[in-house]
Length: 333
Image (tube, rainbow, N blue to C red; front, top):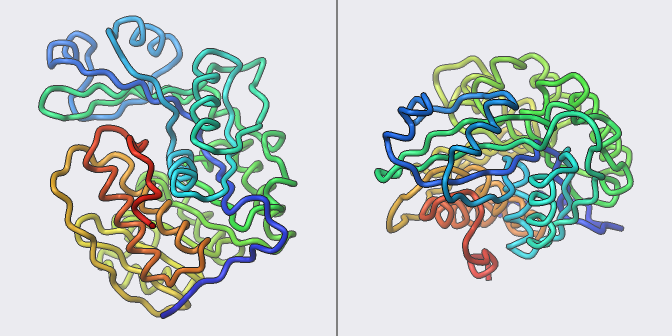
């Protein structure tokens, strides 16, 4: 079976992730609350600091936990048993402390100093109505100020794999931070993985992402919509074939239909495992990436790595939120 070996010589970490450090604030509300707060049900809106403070005050009992796409993946990897580190910008405030505490208690090394100036820590308000619909308002805050000084080159050089998220490409300083991280990884002979984040992100940065594939990225994660957007093809097979010609390893997730894995231009399909019930799809892609990367870090075949990804994704969609309620290592024992 085909493998994708990682260079683990001289490593402290299996995976170091760089992404938007966001605290998820989850609350159960009713439709009347959404109407009162003028929150379109089922939607996601970006908000400013003043709105974030007002909404936080209006919520009743809620739960705060660290979030963000790559942060979710790295935390899940730690739960699986991998050695992980994370880099993201938080402010020296209450939510920044919550993010740091959550990551460290999960087993993730997170040592980026909290910012003393600038915007407060990012947060995403996740309002869940009785019908399980999720309505989100996101304040990106300190994430928008991520910069090269937030990148620890030594940690990256001691990591078998660097994992990056496309969302960071939206800010010039963050973009330079990613480039610094890439240089550190390549200089140490490490592999680099990238997630496209979402279709709108691809539309904003398509040409730059395409250039990254050719020059710097070894492993690309995309869902079927992101893959089509990147390749500008309506046919998924054609889109995947084109992307696979640009990158060594491509993984295209397709929800309940499974995932397609392409290595050096040759692809195969891995079916998803059935789940008893679907509660919340949030974090499915993040947890799939965690399972897949864990498999790679343990020298598993690409097929087995994908199956690990499916098991992790299947676990997370049967609960609310993108952080597993139970340790994930039982899924890969």
